[in-house]
Length: 119
Image 1 (cartoon, helix red, strand yellow):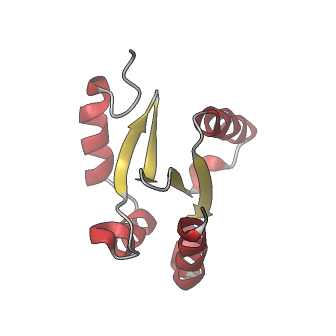
Image 2 (cartoon, rainbow, N blue to C red):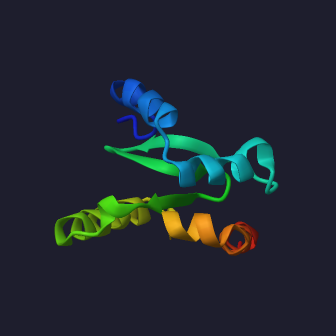
């Protein structure tokens, strides 16, 4: 069976991404880590050829933080392809922008909590 999660070939990149996280990602991680919301989340988690920002295995929930690099037509198309692949595995993807985290952390946490309480 082919390995799908946390490919060994991506280990170095995942470490780099964790160390070089953007401020919005670091702020959200401070709220998600250590089961602060009642569920275990992993940061910079590999799924297939993709590395997602946050993943809750128990809830099969992916949280993506979109910054300025998600604004061109090609980047938007790439995000759609990525999301369709992840959803094909039965995973739920929710997205927030850097501004959402900066300006409305309580609202972001409410949405995440609501998703975690489903099913």
